[in-house]
Each structure stands twice: as C-alpha cells, then as structure tokens.
Length: 328
Image 1 (tube, rainbow, N blue to C red):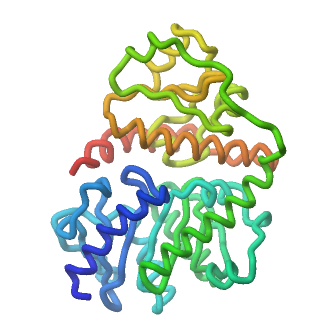
Image 2 (cartoon, rainbow, N blue to C red):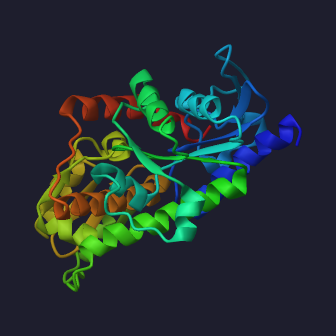
C-alpha cells in the first residue's frame, strides 16, 4: 500500500472498532507502520465517524516529528514503543474494550485460554498505571512489551494490541475480549437474576431532549450499592470522580442530573441527560463498562483506585480539549 492507502486504513479501522464496540467516542487509537521509522496514526480528539485519510498524520518516531493537518494521538509514543520493540509488528490498536479493561484492574490470574487462544494472543501482560499521554504510561507499557507480550492491558485504561496486519490485530482484540469475558462473567454469573423492577416517571423524560434510561445487570447491581467511584480513565474524563445513585424520586434524580450527566437509580438503572445527542450513546457504553469493571473488582476483593486529583485533572482536560475536538 502507498501512504495514502495506509492512512485510509487507519480511518476505516476506527469505524470497524466502533461497530465492534471496542472503542467509543474518540477513545483509543490506531496506527500502521509505513517504514522503519514512521507510522500513520489516528489524530488527537477526532471522532472515528468523521475521520478521513487526510485527517491521519504521520509520525516519525526517530526524529519525534509529525506531518499532517492534525496532531497525532497523544499516545503516539506508546505506539512508537511497540514498533521499536517488535520490528515485525505492522499494526497497533489501543482499545477500550469492556472485559479486557476490567481484567486489567485485577490481573491475569483468572484467564483460562484454549491452546488456539494462547497461540493467537501469546502472553498477556498488565502495565502499571500512568495518566493518559504521559511519559510514565509510555514507559510502563514499554516495560510490559519487553517481557515478550504483544497484548498489554493498561491498568485503569484499556488494552494495547500489536499485530502483523490489521486483520491479525483486530482478531487478537476479539479473542482477548472473549477470554476476558469468560473470566469476568465466571466471577459474576452466580445464578442471581438482576433485572429492573421499576420505571421512572414518564414526565421526567421531558426534562431534556437528550435523555435516556438504560439498565444492565451490572448497572442495576451498582445502583443498589449506592454508586461507585471512577476506576477507569474514560469514566473520570466524561463524568468525573464518581457516579452517584439515588432513589426513584423525580426531585432526587433531577438534582443529581444538575450536577452530572448521569445518575444511577435503584431498581431502574441509569438515567442520562446530556447537551449533545452523541454523548448519550457514548455514556451508555462507558457506564455499562465501568459498572462491570467495578462489580468484578468487588468480586475479586480488590480496590484499584484513581486519585481524586487525577480524576479532576482528566475531567478538566476532557472538557477543555477533547470534547470540543470530536466533531472535527
């Protein structure tokens, strides 16, 4: 492929990952190697739905320079570490897939793989935490890669997956999710049926245009627990340090929604009210994932925390920067 075709492949891959629910909004990033020192990478802050080949910058990881109409992803140095570590790697994706993200909070001890899955994935390592886009995160991922892994779970964040080409890399992401899903649901599927037993007042649905109510077993479980603090970077970015739970009372729900875009409601699920329509779908994916991750860490009796300072910092950066870039 020529350079423009490789850039188009990056743009197209973003939409594939969205369809497979391996990423949401602008989270995650994608790159393809061009030569021994350059790769094309998804741009910073642009939604995958709107991405075109012309939007995809080229990063020179030897000179640490880039060219193009848009800035490369803030995680470009994580991708550079992958290409430096493995000369045979031609494609890298960073995903925010639900079950792999949950496992990254706990560790890989519960993972059980078939011989075929182990052949596809190889060793799976967990990288210690670093804030998104920081040298610390890059160093931690690189250390995990150097242990021989081409699949790395980034604690509190997601996964980095390396492959021989796009198809190989996406296949690894899907196999990884299947393996991690078995581990997580194996801890949580204890025979208890959790379903919504209540509904919100229909009048409340007129509180705003972009309003929705949804429920999963894990969301309902965490609503009964009184909400939970953010364990994942994307939740901290989009909601802040905590999602609260309230009783199914209009005043309580509206008061909570005046302070946050989402609130858990006992026996109902999650109520979302946002300014932008596409925020609703993104929050549904994010909150469902965060609830699963939190319930899994409770079942494993671990409590991986994000600091209040880090949550506030990520929320501030998101509001000032990325939320304004997503439309291009």
